[in-house]
Amino acid sequence: MLTAHKLKILPEYFQAVWDGTKTFELRKFDRDYKVGDILVLEEWDGREYTGSAICKRVSYILSNCSEYGLVDGFCILGLVDYNGKNS
View: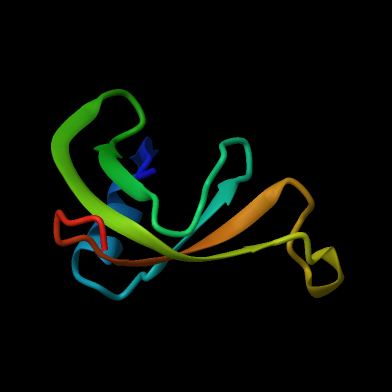
């Protein structure tokens, strides 16, 4: 089943996702993220939402590898464009 996760993202990171130079998210692994899930990244300036948002699909999840420097409880989510379909 397709799950959408609404997440705050600061403007500098939002812009990098928007223009395609940032293709990943480093996040606490405090949700049940799965490959195929949708991230609704809502721009947050630290005080309020700006009204800008972008949807990305999770293509890969890296977690549980503290031996390579990823802190336990965090994950790296690979992002690809989401075309509005369940594929």
